[in-house]
Image 1 (cartoon, rainbow, N blue to C red):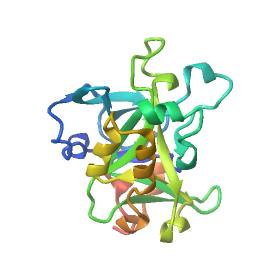
Image 2 (spheres, rainbow, N blue to C red; image 1 turned 60 degrees about the vertical axis):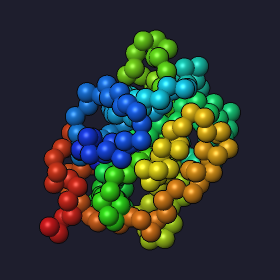
Image 3 (tube, rainbow, N blue to C red; image 1 turned 180 degrees about the vertical axis):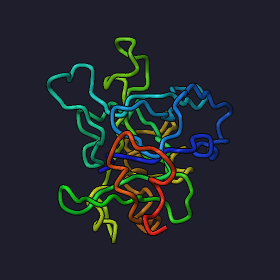
Image 4 (cartoon, rainbow, N blue to C red; image 1 turned 180 degrees about the horizontal axis):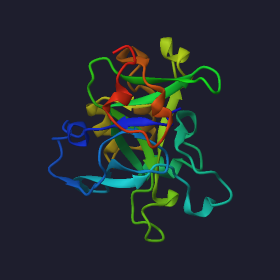
Length: 227
């Protein structure tokens, strides 16, 4: 799963998207080394035939407007379920990208869990596949799950399983651009998600336990505890 991530240099994270004729960046979010669910974070998306790339702050956690009290808010969406009745509409019309520097997972027993920072070996930006509602907020409130996003996750593999059995679906910049193409059929979008970056692209190390506190911030949270 992905329950916390590192998104501390937003301008750098979107630099690979010069393919678009115009980027409309309306985000006011500050960089964060410790992004937690329910926070408002920048998400990239496109709309219909509009050539622009939009970047807006949206609620991390999605719940369809009709699902209040019926379906829980989802911060993550399993890749195996993105074609079902609940997520299938968003796979057609609500694909987004969440740029990040890395994400955190925990190992160990309750009370003594050890956090890990997971990132690309080459330290290039990560582009998480996301599904969400990127139209106008149904009630005018963008800070609500009905206008939020969920990060798509897949089974982990290789040594990454030792840290956690699920991981975000992470694209290269090229595949992220394809995922955002509104003309891409959902069947092809699913195929791209299933062939996203493999575990060989990533590395991980232990980081300070302070990252477990959602109020903790600072670059030291993403640095290895051995220096």
